[in-house]
Image 1 (spheres, helix red, strand yellow):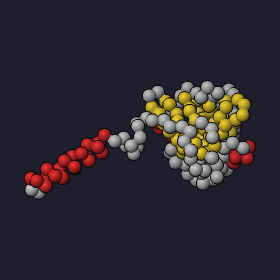
Image 2 (image 1 turned 30 degrees about the vertical axis):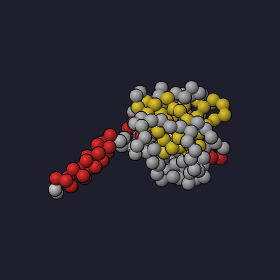
Image 3 (image 1 turned 135 degrees about the vertical axis):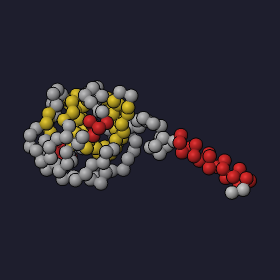
Image 4 (image 1 turned 45 degrees about the vertical axis):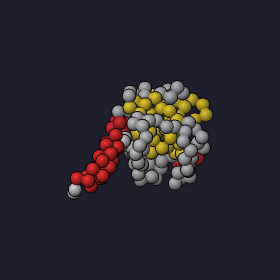
Length: 170
């Protein structure tokens, strides 16, 4: 390459290299950003979806979750699904706080079941629940919602009881 060509293209290559190094790995949004309430298209199952964020210490984890609102949607939940992405889940909001109890009947994959208090903190987590089990998995106190994520994900991400869950029902 001639000196003039290097000067012409070298600067461009350098600028691209620098910008690639400074952009967040998630495609350009702020690292640890937590957007909730974004308007999303319905899921493949026809359920409304929303963004949800869990703050765990200094880390923030964002998920796209389906909202199981009706009693029929809540009864079906994640039954018969064979996979669940690491950034996806399902939330079950309740009109009033209650001691929620779930089972894994007809649920093919293990799930982490997260029980959420009225103030948004995690009451408890049932990790890696057993597929097809009819044993109840229950909260230890009244909760206003339950979140299901891929089994083992809460451990991998360091999500624990006391962490904060933020989401906006649409």
